[in-house]
Length: 469
Ligand code: SAH
Ligand code: SF4
Ligand code: F3S
Image (cartoon, rainbow, N blue to C red; front, side, top):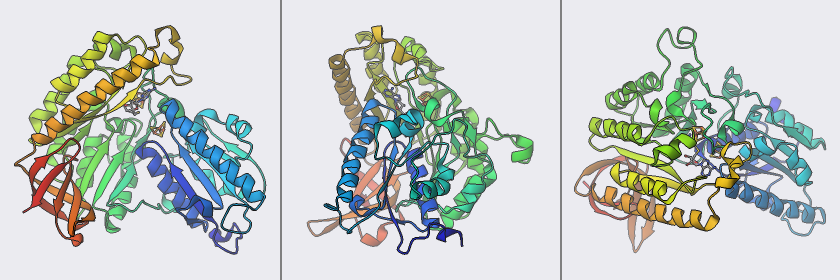
């Protein structure tokens, strides 16, 4: 049998630390699935692992630095292990692997910089892992960072290996990967390559399987999930139908069972009228849109190479709000983009208010190699101003989130119960409404995994309180 190929007497153990977005989390589930197929057991204790892996994110310098410092710690362990001082087992041959977006970006440089790293593999090489592991176990140091994406080309590997999904009610289902937009600040087109979509039949099959396994929610993933289908052929891939996210949602909605469907992340101008219509038609699809705006100022948006201005973004938001009663719209913003003036920054604060955004992820601009904006050093905003703007942005976001939550009081939401906590002899349940708001309420442990109706009785900045009805 194939999974004996590593020839180990006891199952080797793998520890993987995942940084970054849901796409990385989804890659980790595929990596763990592949490794378990070849006999690896997952451990949550890095000191117990034979194979240490970090799945990295490169979106900001801070994320990359986090990966470098973790690798530094593991390198020390590896050295100590060789002198048999620290670890639980008497002797192990620890291997260290560096993957994800920083690996795709830095390539061989990582092997040079970190002499104790055995394997560097990029986002396009995930399915070569079995072969790569064999090579490092034979003593080689390997760097595999293809520029051409292999994933989603024929789907064969995806069917062959199991997916080791995280313990959760939600299953991540990647439907497209990569980005053709080249926003001037963003590294993603360089780490994830050009856009490509998976065939509808594969996505439907994977969803059916996840629902059979008991998942209560699926989240369709893509860097620009709403441009799904662009590279697919309607005739060959979809019985002559237009391959769009809207049509895919309609098909997934037909799958039997009680479950929810979500999708992230949407590019504002790729949200079509038909997509809004599909979300409205499909009872399983949640009324929740994550639509990063990035800046509230049209000139900055132009310099960011975003394909919309403030007004266009506002019109899209309005269209969505008019279509639904309890929809939530969330966003991402960058503070201190090169050249951003105080007035332009104020437009970002006013956009959050004007468009009544329910919640936003925020970040200070971080220059990334290869991107256009990183070369505009003469326009860089000093660190102090950037962090002050970020603090003000966060304050505005807190206000917006509280306001949005307060609007929910008195309403009744269907909640998918995700977890419980015991506090002062009471069971406090936590779950999500269809609009993705987190709700806490008293109940029984066995409600976890169930859909229940909850009346909202109170609101704080980051969550709602309610009562089971
Ligand atoms: N595809 C999505 C965003 C994916 S990246 C979109 O187009 O909106 C996730 C978020 O990281 C972005 O929305 C942006 O707000 C942030 N980000 C990306 N590059 C950044 C950089 N160089 N500095 C700071 N934040 C950045
Ligand atoms: Fe990055 Fe822009 Fe692509 Fe989003 S659309 S992943 S921000 S380049
Ligand atoms: Fe980070 Fe790569 Fe995702 S850079 S945000 S892990 S696509």
